[in-house]
Length: 450
Image (cartoon, rainbow, N blue to C red; front, side):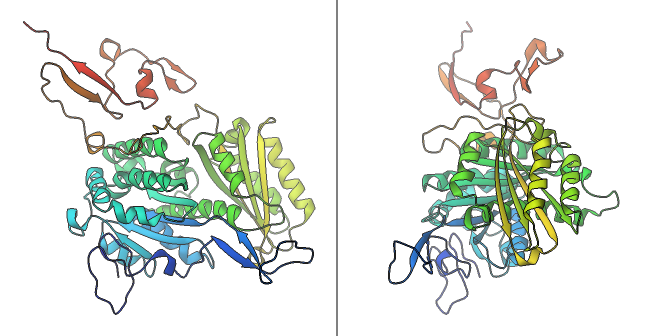
């Protein structure tokens, strides 16, 4: 059972607005703050026969209808995983998430219904319950925000969630998907604006354009299966990053490694998965990498400044196989690239090999990854305003009136509208610098008539 603005669970106590009946701390999923482990021979520091192992406390947030569906499916697949919460304006979607902790936002604004695909309503819903949202991120080190951009709640509320997570001191990673082209120009435009706003606030935005899935699925794949594949790929990427920072493996990567990688790229990241089975599993993985649509047939690795490789296999995974795998990846990748490698063995992956790539792409790539504008240190700098989300309107301007130029206002090219754009390294130099970099400015318009 969910209540407006708070996380709740079925209890004997009455439900009142603004009262939390279930908190994240009561979630059955483990909390990764301090964890007791048995001491090993030679351990120097002991505390009552146990040591305290410090692990990053991770929270996965599914936002909006798409994000809620993705994390709900992901949570069912994980035997053990991070804490998960679903956030939405639609009460029915929260109910479908089962026993996951849920935060119902915007009840006072939209009465428990959806946003009708309007990002402005999603933003208003989040603003109306900002205190409850802020409470999600207390005592959290890493936040994974999963959202399908283009809709109302996800697009409108996501920047505010990212802002509050960062204020709490958490590292914020956004796993987002972009609409298929057939979903319409309006939804694509909403997604584009929402993506820019997220890049301005999050530590990293890992992006999956759904249109690229057309290159990964068979021609006869039905639409339900196609969307499920999107959810599965987002879940796999998220799970791989979480395993890297929270699990010890044969070859370890940790939270600081991932953090350094993400900050090295200033938010420009892409991920891809490859899997192999049987005696030729290494060869299968390398072949998948060379033809993977999300890696642009290997070109993404060939141009990457840095990337992380998370390798998962069973107890049968040999040192020779790992060596062959990494040698093959090194041949595909850029010679000067920084490569971080983690290897983990688990029983359920016997005779299987699963590899996840988290790539810091070269600036000016073809759209799989989008560069993040420089963040404003002032509070709210990454928050997209309702005026920016909606289509721009033209109003009469009085003498001396200050007008703020919106981040998402359409750029008019005037007399050059029919002239081919000047594009250098993926940047349209005909667009003013402050527009390209997402810098908000103010200008004074004066009426000189008469």
